Length: 476
Image (tube, rainbow, N blue to C red; front, side, top):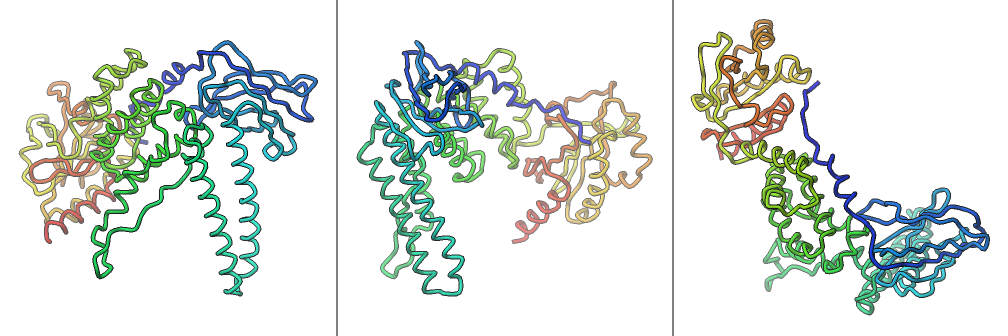
């Protein structure tokens, strides 16, 4: 099993949440529930896609659940948590004094609202959507039965398309006619972007193949009220925001870093929204499985955490995450590999990484006690045999500071002798574990002729594919 010393950024997520409180002016929300008495009801607030308890009450004998307090209930999306548990959403804007009434047997269909325009609009819309969902479900069932009747099937499909158009028209109308209504803004965040056709020449040939993609990216947040801090307390914004950075954007560190900075500038006016965005992006970049994305993590740490823009971080957590970024930075893609000059099994002959003359150099840091390394070692030898005559060499670094087990393993596996086997020792220590961010083994990097890092954090199987691709690219 691979040895791991990974410091997980998510450990201090609790610091972020603990600093988020719901406080300020008073509130009073009444929920009348038919056929439900003497039950405990919770009011939970969203932060992103997660729910946190904000208040609790007991339903009176008259079926009334009353939530009230002297502190502020910040604008956002909340949920009534009924026994079961059953969750029913409720919106809170700048006027948190309203009444709602419903029958628990059909909460949404029977919902009545007094004193809250945003909830009235929102629940009218949900009722409309539920009706349309039922219509589409029935049509889909008919479509299954009409699979052999193409004319009938097309007619059903047209009806489904018409319903979707009705929903889209309703969404656009609500947002256009009620731009400042919190309910309309929440609905707007779920709306897809209408992308126009690309420009074409007189022959109908598209003249800008990237037009639609650029439009999609540039208008992705058109229906998101970024000037309203309440969006941080909605799952709709959470989904939209994460979809943009995880799916819509090209997943390259330069691209996501640039858009991260642009987006952060738009939300830095609000401390809570700023924290939400900065934390998520930092954590997402650090834990990304995409090679090279650690550069985006380093970018976030250097430009926000190390510049005193994250006051919610305590000194210990800040020091830990800063150290993590500083360890990552030397081996970012495109950098020249950190210098190493290590000795062989005799402890007398030294070989520098930069003395290795090869078109491609594999830096392979492994440990004889590492179970995963034992599986990768024979693969590494096979890979070397396959590419030796194509200018590939392997600088094989034993991770143990004490050399006995490393030497013993090499003696028991003479095939490893084909590689350039080196290590350090108490007598000749080296800092490669720090410079190469060795928090687990094995560590594999691929360097070009100039010793620039072109691949990292890969297994031997993936390494072979990358080398094949590089060789093909150079032949063309």
